[in-house]
Amino acid sequence: MFIVPLTSNITPIEPMQLKPVQAEEPEKAQEGGTFLDAMKGLWENAADAQAAKTEDMVNLMLGDTESLEQMQINITKAQIATELLVNVKNAAVDAYNEIMRMSI
Image (cartoon, rainbow, N blue to C red):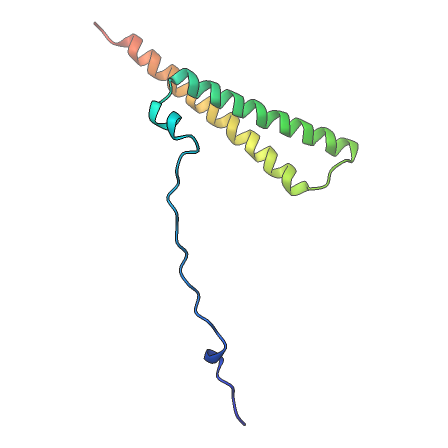
């Protein structure tokens, strides 16, 4: 019995070339933003995620859902965005309180 070797039909896999991640808007990345801009961005992100979650929940109740996976992703995004906003806010309040306790 003759066994056909597998190596003749298999082509080697080429390694992936990773590209460096660049900012979408280099002008903004170089300017830097204020803390207020960062907090506004976090707030808007959390609000958008909560709105998407609420819309998905309403669609689920009405039976107009097509993708339960996307709904779960939106719910998780809303939870993470809210947790991030709260954690950053708590860190900012703690830093403010620490500065207020410093003696001059």
